[in-house]
Image (cartoon, rainbow, N blue to C red; front, top):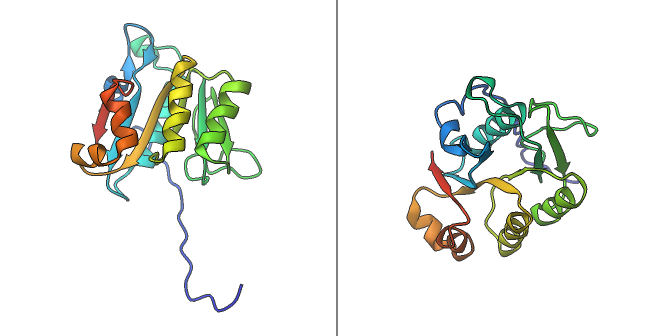
Length: 178
């Protein structure tokens, strides 16, 4: 590397309890599972932080709601969610969460389904055709999902034909705007 003019450090931080107001929308208490959920907001508004807290809560369970912990698989493509160091998550992502890091979302979801048997898969910033195909394969396998994407409103969802198809086909059950 030569002539570096600037550096940008992103430090993942946890905000415990930030999902408290919306967790009831994500969880299906009747069936003791979750709804396939899409979290949408512009960059820098807390999608990843919210996703991290939701996964922690779902993984640990919620005794007061009689919601048992779910086995979660987290595809942490850029290391922002779990902040793993030498394979060990530095952030609290729950006791039943397995992390696949530093691989594409597509490969990570396939690896989790084949080797970890998650009940729930989570990944950040979906949008490509390959991401959506991997999500469809996970859902066909009976795995639920929580995903995030950049956007500000339903119009932004409609502009992404791949994600819009998931919504139109009712494979995404809940959409949360931040």
